[in-house]
Length: 125
Image 1 (tube, rainbow, N blue to C red):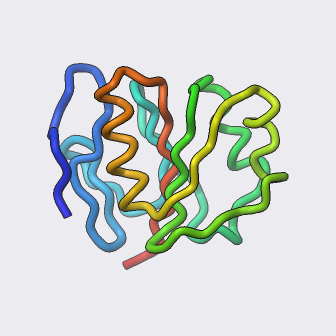
Image 2: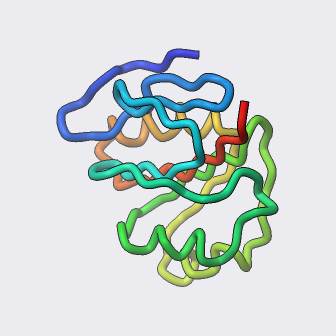
């Protein structure tokens, strides 16, 4: 599935999503990752929602996003709110959806100039 646009100056954009692979601009990633609206993409060592801990979500605080779009894999799966309590305490919104929907939503929000961070789970293909 290809997403548009391919590039915005200085902004991370999800270009494409394939089974087990997500493309940020023209770079493919084959494991779960954190994609800030600007800056370096980082690995997020988890494959399934059950792998996540509060520490996974605490890493997000360093970016101070206004919103986190959490892509939970091929289908929408919620994690316990205690895992992202640190985000709630800092008044950072979090929306959970399947990874494809999260990628599309991330792109819309970054084109609007929002400080959004995508937290995408990518199970192996």
